[in-house]
Length: 340
Image (cartoon, rainbow, N blue to C red):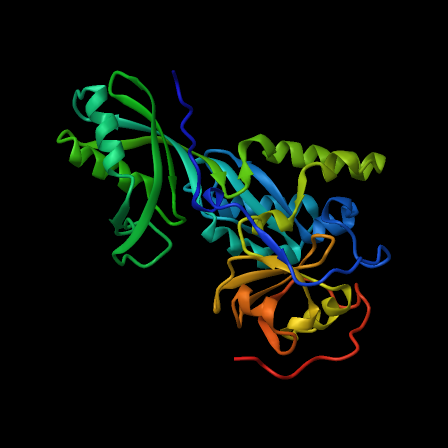
């Protein structure tokens, strides 16, 4: 009997479970579901899941996307070295504010490692399993961050194939993990030495290889839109920014509370409809509309259990706003009292 082993990033092992505090229907004349946005709105609030080619830097790729789409600003979800390929989410316009949410999602890579000596496959498998843990890493000399010793989590490793001294393996890890350093450490553990030969990123949170597009795809789609006014091809290449917070704990609110949050107000308990069951005080959360639109990031001022029990006070301190003002009707009042 064979068993299929699941390789999951941390957030995938815990399903989202929501509890209802109150019920209310949403008014269809305000806002819209993320998947129903117009092309103009998608370009302002979307993310392109780009297949980064080998050669250019991540910053150069993001700049090319900005030029192709005629935007003032773009940002990418995690730097890849020039020689590394694969998943590079590029946020468009104001959506660049959401890209930091991907830091807690985890990443997955497919790596080709070259061994400096001959090693049996069984030993390689055993050593890979030993590295499925917290590791100490110091960023390499050529890096964009300070070279301080830090810990990074390896969530899983999977031996895939071996040919001669070349080893193909999959690794799921915390953002900021240096796979080149991981290969070096694996080589030390094998007592033969090793280095990274090739690397491809296959996942960044919910952004996977099955939704990738190339720079050429994006350029062709933009030309088709400009010349024939056909937006469908380009729309299919832009993903709503809400996908970047798929792994975050969420609170869904009333239509009447949305515009207050858009103006920077904190969320009152009275505005909550349903929420993640496991939210703890001081935890970061995403505030959402009933249509699934991202309104803001905030910090919970109380746990889910307390939000369900009380009926007055503020429950989320707003930190970063994404919803434009005026999309939803103006609020009638903003509660001031904070329940400790």
